[in-house]
Length: 510
Image: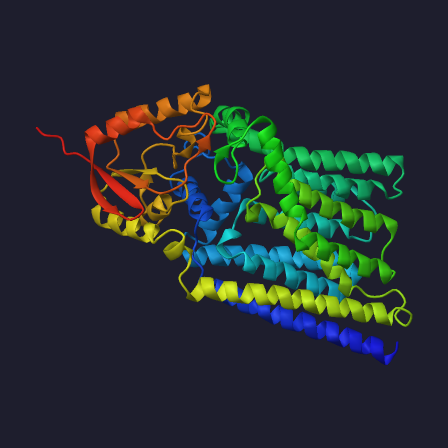
């Protein structure tokens, strides 16, 4: 080993150290972030589950799968519902993800593994509240475990197959589209020379490991009387919800396909596939890659690019697995060379590229993290302070037994109810589904169920967040006439500020 190679290794370690310190600084700053957007709604449903023994689909209407509810219930049960509790749970999950990422990359060298960990952490912190506890982020726990399992040196076993099946089931219970990653993993695994008997045992163990959690979930839903509403959600509502774009516009037919193609192009024409290709190129040039591993990592990148196309939703947090996979592959530029003396120049080039990549991630993550922590955060800017104001009003006006009905989605009403410990009046925690595909029989049933529920037991307050973009386009409606007339007849505006109104039930005259 010559001096130049020693210097290369030392520089790699310095880059990793600096990137790691930056990631640690981001983690500390993130403790001051506030929960926002989807997270308060998920926490609210989790609190209903843990404190009121509510069951998803039966007791509240929502589009997520049981895996998400169970993980969020773990947050509420063991950490609580405060902003700090969210951050601690978030960082705990990140710790597991980074540890598994390290295990998955370690076979290519300590520096490559550490660089991959730092890049993933910095990209997460750069996403700030937009990435916090999103479904795709929750799914990184089993996904990173799958990639760590694939990097094992020993042949497949029955225990390994069962574990892999459980991890796939975990991913499916959060977002079924993530099973696309099973294709490269299984092809890579089956590429090993197992022999027919070992192959059959491994496949059987994998199938059992996959089906047991799914069967257990089905039994849990049936036992709690939630199976039928769950099936209605999957078969009747998901196809309708899946036709909406990121701006809540209903798109069908050829227009929908063009939208998906544009979204796929938006994923492709970013710098993430470029850095992944450069990382693989350095890795191949250093002589550390076989054709099998090259196809495996390349197919992972392709699958991560295709993933958002299955749901037709291309918001930034839907790309979290894409960012994760491409940055892990990009870190392979720091892999150990197979022949250190002959490939010193290429190794130095990889060091330079890794340094630039780490510097770019640090330059993006640190300012965003500090701004969200110590500047005006999302609740003050994006939500206009509505959650805190709604919570303050409810705390001072709610009496024992009062119920509150939000007319909202992510505008802050449910967040305020979470802070104020207010209970919902119906199983509907937001109202946007009343305004798209209004002629569909399922939406008509939802409307009638909502009207019947509030007429049978009128809530004390309605929290109406204004200014949110409602569904628009084909088959949508800007009004819910029967409800609006009933509300105007039986309620008055008790408080009104920019962005929200609080309706209070009129007193009944004797």
